[in-house]
Image 1 (cartoon, each protein chain N blue to C red):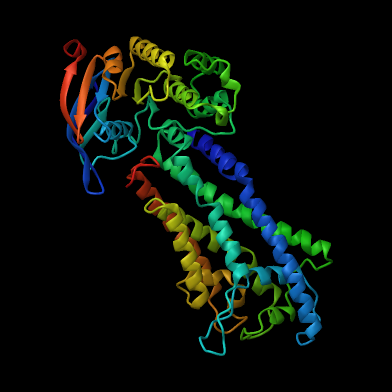
Image 2: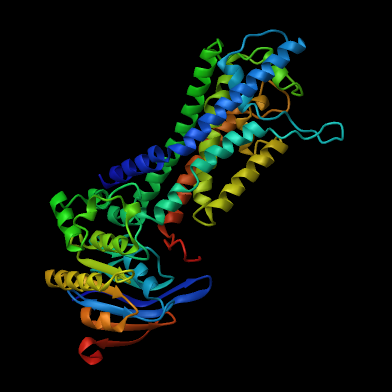
Length: 284
Length: 218
């Protein structure tokens, strides 16, 4: 019972009452859709990539496309996928401070009242995953509304426009609906949840801001290297296997994300059991 | 019968012993004052007893159960440690109600009564962010005692309080002691401690340097 009361508190105060972060994310997605619409107009005006219809899938492909494999050369400048990283950075920032603030505020009393460290940790894990899910629900709903308003199709078909959005990708074949669903819907969510949980565990050891920087660096490395070891790769639809060469395997990504989520929860659980709860002003 | 028993407890932070080989036994129903300069280890000792930090060496037992292996936190504990922190957007009453909702052992009327006891009867409806430092401290004291716990740990409870507030702390400590609670109060003010405590433990550099009963101090 005490656990559910703690969880209720976390969902109310760590999620609902922290609506400002979600509002900024919503604004980012609106901005991204405007940017996407301009890009589509440019692609259509160019006339190279055909006149396929815009769908919610096309927009999500643009948002979670990431970057084609980077091959360093003077003729190939490194163009940072700013939108992709901005979305993930925002999600990771939204989930950054609440556990820390909670432990240094009223949460300390709630933790003692609950009587169990494991209750606090598990409640924070559920809150963390719920927050990431809330971010993606905002992204999906905003994408849905924008697509409907602009007369787009409600499908995950990205068609020839995808090639125009990522002209440097080495396509094996034209992206199909079913192949992309995983990379557009569950994959980014799983990657964000895994990173967010790792970030929360690391925040037990180093200051949250440094933990956040570690997450950002990991995303940056994922952009630079196409490697199954860097989970950011699985959140880039343009690196989806069977669509493009230089890709990563979706099944491996799914397994890796679930493994990271499980290990983070377990490791954090063990770590928090012996964690010293000091005040904000007390250096560790 | 001792409620709190620390045996050769050592705790290091950043390779410095903040608590060094401390042994302490506190009998049920007594008020023990902890006195020492800043950084002497008073707050760390309270944190160890509360289960917020774990000893590197030695054992902390509350009611004969080892903190760490047997229980995460003492079952019936009220705590005021460092600056009290509550939710800014809630009023005083709602903050206390939120805390009380976890154990769910006291009524709204008892929360209101506690608010009144600490001098926040009317201010209970005021948003926490509008509280003065003294009012925040009073609310922290209310949170520590509202459920009438068996063990109460108060770290510098008179911080930011006026004379009336200091009297209020003394009154509450006496009342809780009469009820049977075991109370530890960390304070650097000798006069305040002698008014509240049965025994004063002096700390320096993480060690207990001497213990005096209040009769001796006076």
